[in-house]
Image (cartoon, rainbow, N blue to C red):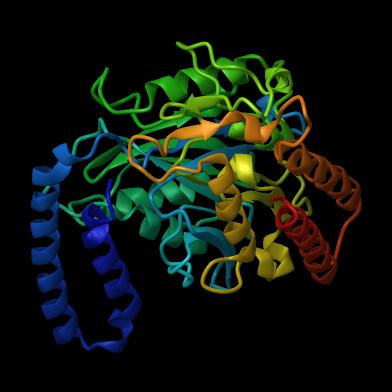
Length: 430
C-alpha cells in the first residue's frame, strides 16, 4: 500500500492524538470531516490500486508457543515490510502499562505502533491480511492504533480478545492478523476485520507455532498475498527440531533469509565461492528479507509461572541483512539513543547507508535486486560476516547478563552498551 493510501489512517492518528484539546462539539465536527476525507481516500485508493505492482505492507510473522521454544517462553517474530524505511523504537510511559514499541520515525508518541511489548509481558505484532472482508466506506489502516491501545491496557490474551469484542464495528479499522503473547504463556493469532475475528491458538497446532504472511486462514482461500514467503518460513521452521526454536536463530538466520521454495537461490555458505570481482545479483521480491523490510522484531515473553522473569524485545532496526539484533527491556525505562535519537535513529541511518551497498539501484525495476557478493565472497570483503560476528557476541553477552536478576539501571546500561557496540561496528562498514 502506498503512502497515499495511508492518508486516512494518518489523519485519524493525529485526530486521536490531538482531540484531547477540543470540546465535544469540535470533536464531532472534526470527526465527521475526517470520515468524509477517509471515504474519499479509500475510493481513490481503489482507482489507483492497479498502478502498484505489488503489496508493500506485506510482513512475515510467526507466533510461537512455549512448547516450541527452547527456553519454554512464548515468542513472536515479525519481519516488517513497509515503504516507511526509517523506523525507531520508543519507550512509552503509560498507565496501566508502560511499553516498548517499533514505530515510524515521525510517530514517536507511541500511539501508532507496529510491534511492541509491555511491562506485564504482553506482546503484540501484526501482518496485513488481504483476504479478509473489507468495505471501502469503513475505517481502515488503524492496526497501529489498535496495537498501541492494547499495549497500554492489556495484560493477557484474554484482555485483548475482550478489547476486540468491545470495539468491533465499522470504526475499528482492522484488516489484519494480530499475533499476541502474554505472561501466562499463551500465544495466539487473531484474524481480525471490522465485524469479526477468528482465533487460532499455537498450543493447538501440531508443532506449537503458527506461521503467517498476508492472508488469513479464515479468509477466502487462494487469495491474499505472501504465499511464497509463507512457504519459505514454514520450510525454515520445519527444519528446526521440535521444541528448539530460539530467538537467536530467528534473528541471525531466518530474518535474513533470501531463499526461495520454487527457485534455486544460493545459500549464504555458497557466497564464499563467488568473487567480488564478478558481482552476483539476486531478485528478492518474494524472499523473507526484502527491499521493503524495515526491521525485524522477536519478542521473547516471560517464562510461564515465573513472574520475576524478564520479557525481552529484540530488534534489528533496518533491513536485517544490513543491521544488528539488540535486546531491549521495558523495565529499563528507556531506549538507547542509537535506536531512538534524532530525525533518523543513528542505527537505522547506518543500516540505510549499508543498504545502498547491498541495493545500489533506486530504479523501480532494479531496487529489488541485491548484490550478493557484497554480503560475502571468496576474497573476504563482504560485510555480513562482520555484522554476524558482533551479533553473536551480543547474544552471548546477553545470555550471561540475564542469568541473575538485574536492576532497571543495570538493564539500561547493558542495552546502551550493546547498542553502542553495534553502532560502531556498522559505522566501520564501507
